[in-house]
Image (cartoon, rainbow, N blue to C red; front, side, top):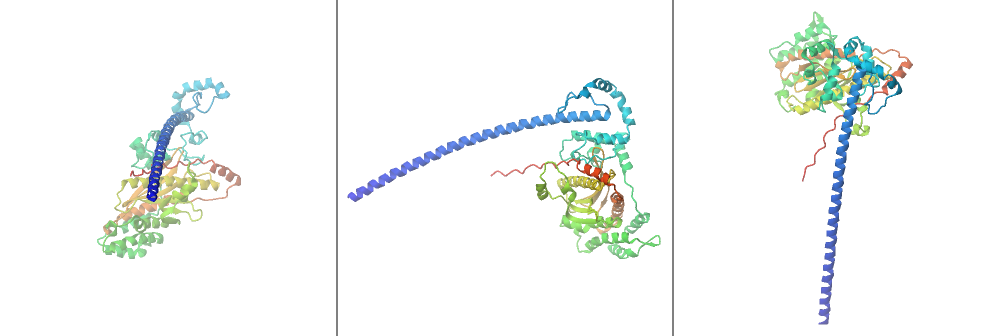
Length: 505
C-alpha cells in the first residue's frame, strides 16, 4: 500500500509540474504575439511615413524640374531670337558684373525684339544657326541623345522650322513610348507628328528630300518585262530556269541581276510546288518565314548593288551594346538586354553597321501590341547605329558626316517597309522610302517587280551614303575629332517597364 501511495503522489506532482510548464509556455507565446504585433505596427507606420516623404520629394522634384525646363526654354528662345535679358529668375546662376552693367542696353534690345525678329530670321545664315544650336548652352532643346557638337543641316520647308514644331510637340506629348521622347522626328505618313504639319508642307518636304538612285535603266525595264503575269506555274518555272540566258536590248542580262532574281524566286517556287501552300497554312513560324521568304529578297538585291556582310536571325547589334546609356549598369545591360535584330548588314573591313531588319511575325501575325513594340525597338536601334557611325568617323578624323544615315526594313505580315534616319540640329529625322508586298501564291509573282525594283533603288541610295572616300588625315585634325568623341552626350534610357504584380494567394 505504501508503494502505491508513493506512486500516486509522484503522479500528482508530475501533473502539477506539467500544468505549470504549459501555463508558462502559453504566457510566453502571448507575450511574443503582443510584441510582434507592436513591432509590425511600428514598421507599418514607418513605411507609411517613408511613402509620404517619398511622395512629397517626388512632387517637389517634379515642380523644380518643370520650373528649370521652363527657364531653359525661355533662355534658348531668347538666345536664338536676340540678346539675353536680365537673368533674375535663374535657378542656379547669379547676375555677373558685366550683366549688371549691360542691363540698360539689354532692356532696350528687348523692346525692339518683336519688331526685328522676323528680319533677323530671314537674314540669319544657316552656318550661324548650326553654331548657335550646337553650342554648350543648348540646354533642354539640344536633346541628350544627340551626338557631338557637329555641323548639321536644319530642317526647313517653305520657311517653316520643322524642328521648332517638333520641340513643341515633344513637350506636350504624354506618351512615354512616343518616338519624340527619343528625339526622333517621325515623318512617316502614319505618324501622329505629321498632324502638326499641313499636308502641303509635308508633301513638299517628302518630295524635296526623297533620295535619288543610281540604277541602270535597262535593269528596271527587264524586271518589269520578266514579271508580267503568266498563265501557269510551269511557265514561271521555265522562264526562271532560262533566266541566265535572257537578254536586254540584244545584250545578255547582267550576271548580278540574274543571280538576284534567280535566288529570290527559288524558295517561292519550291514552296508553291509542294502539295499545300505553307505561306497560307498558318503553321509558319517567324524565323522560318524570315529566313526562307523575306531575307532572300533583301539579301540578293543588296548583294547585287554592293558587297556587304549580311546576317540574319537574332544578330547582336554592336552599336546598341556600345552606346553610352544613362543610368544603366553596363554589366547588367550587357547580360540582360541583348539588343538583337532579325537582319543586319555591316561593312566587311570596318565592321560598321549600316542596315537593320526587323520582322514582327509570320504572315498570319495580327498582334498590334507586338507590332508597335517591334517598330519602337527598330527605330531606336537605328538611332544607335547612326550614332555609332558618326563616332567611328570622328575617330578616323573625318569632320564631314552631316549627311550620314542609318537604314532599315520593317516587315509586318506580307508587307515590308523601307526607312532611313538622319541627324539634324535638334533632332533625328525618320523617313519612309516605300513598301512592297510578299507573294503568298504563284499568281502573285508580279508583285516581285515592285519589290525588287524598290530594294535595288533603295540600296543604291544606301551605297552612296556608306561609301566613304578615305584620304590622308592630318594628325592635328585627328586630335580635334578625338576630343569631340569624348564630348558626346549620353543616350536616353528606354522607359522603365512596370514591375510584374505578384498573384495574391
